[in-house]
Image (cartoon, rainbow, N blue to C red; front, top):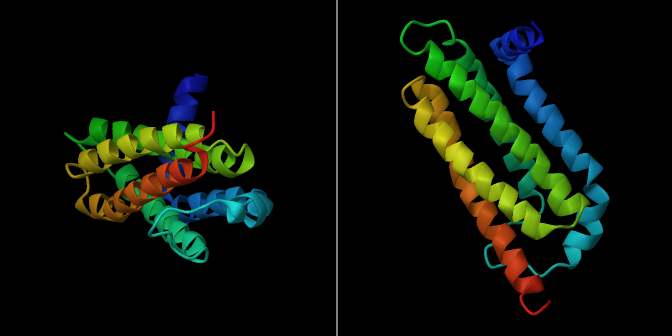
Length: 174
């Protein structure tokens, strides 16, 4: 019963577009706020790889990406009872929740625990999950698919930045 309720609830939450968009933005903002002191101290002192964007770019880009992934979840949820693609839509929502969890884990790993290697493992798994999700969305909702494309690109870039920070700061350390 609890599993049925939780599964049903997970399909219902993104049906409301305001909640679907607002919840990931709010949780992402909270995650960023919690680690702000580490960003201003520890992260600021790290050597960065070539192509590092200005700090102001990160909250802007992530707010847009969280909103896009939330709206993609809303579009996906609208198909959970659609004949022929309902199962795929439910599976995609499961992946979307999983990738969001991995996304939320990255910030405390990287900035909170100051463990860029663990964060790199997380973001690599996240990127794979997001690529799978994006591919699956192609057959469920074209608009949701297109909403995920910038997320794929940014995650590839963020993975490079994470790996570059490890290389530039930890390459000669035991």
